Length: 95
Image (cartoon, rainbow, N blue to C red; front, side, top):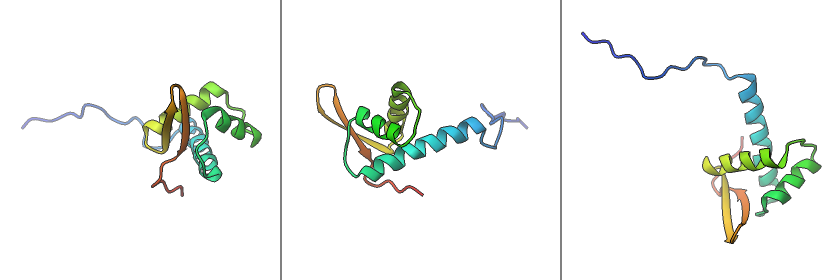
């Protein structure tokens, strides 16, 4: 009988503090974008988050926005060359 060894194994089943913080900030971004109910460019969204007390840099915000687009949680709308607007995906439900 041959034993099959899995190719990868999770080191922890419990979420780390870093992952909790990452998820919390992503949720804040999603909730903010959903609250404005219209598509805005990344810089306008970042300024809005700053007005609410966020101390995230613009580059960190853009990185998270890109990952949220990749995950299908945020919709990216391209109008002209290098002009993009973002809004929550139409079927997104935030709990």
